[in-house]
Length: 524
Figure (tube, rainbow, N blue to C red):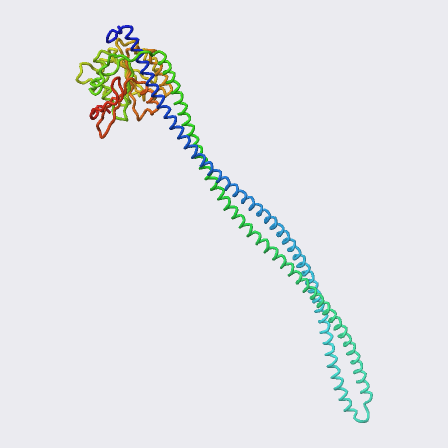
């Protein structure tokens, strides 16, 4: 049967409920203040991010302006390249026309040269005729010489008295030879006239050829000039292309800078979104807490009264506070200091006091570590689990399977709490691990589960101790539990030693810290 550790009257139970409500209200107000401070810090961070984003956007604008100027430069260079390419094409067309003219002149020169060659051949023929005529003149001259010799002989023979007939014959022959010589001379003269005419024609044709050659030379020179202009245009085009290449490189650099700046802007925007999400979470948390304050204050009209305590087995707590407030909510927080041995002492002490325990272990609190806490006591880990006095809610999958070991990866927290409540037969100490609940449920559902567990499953005599590891739980979410707690205990480590401070407890606030010593070897 379920029972209380002591009998309470209806009035005492009402006073206890009012005390709890006022304590919850006071803690919730403190949590609201902490959450508001967190919101202010996040808003300040947003202002800083917004300022940085504005500066980066200004840099982006500058880069975009430089990019626009570079693009305009590329466009202008491109127009110049296009214009010069057109000029090169025109010059090339002019060069081709000049080359065609030069080709026509050369062909004309070739035709004239062929005609000149034919004329020269005809001249050679006439020269041959002259040579033949000259040969005939030579023959006549020889014959004339012979006649003259004969005439001399005949004259000598005739003497002074006669021989006239002989001389007459000689004279006739000489006359005939003279006539023949005259005819040959006329032939030579005519041939020479023809030669002269041919020579004149040749000279005229040579002069025409010279003029045509000169014209052809001019055309060729013009063609060379045009092709030189084309070459110069091509060189300038190459220079322009190089300028375009350099401008393109600058454009690429600017684009890379813009891309990097854009990434930074995107990162800043992501940071801002994260901060806004945190703000929304904090505001939601404030709303829930304020609702709790309103509900608590609406029912609280009496001050706190003395309640029963749950022993912890830790002198620093039991000697100063008498233990945990029964039916209350307490917080054990650390800055990352080891707590496994401390939690083990709490579990063993509660079981020894006749209570049942619902435990959500830390990631390092496994079977062996908790079993070591039972050494020197009359109880055992296996016995407590087997007798429905200890229930383990395994959030980090370090306990394996077994009776009264619940895997929170496969079963809901509400379902496990209901089964625990059904099996237990004594007031319950609920040792929660906030990091484990967040790991399984997420912050929002973990917060909702906290409200659901208050009064919906467990009884008013059941005691809650939430373990908060500052390295795994954020300040805002930790303040959510600390603000609503009846008691707050803090464990800090320094140079291997741990000290426990009673931060807040009924009748005790800001108590000096007490040395706990180094964690046990089994506390991993």
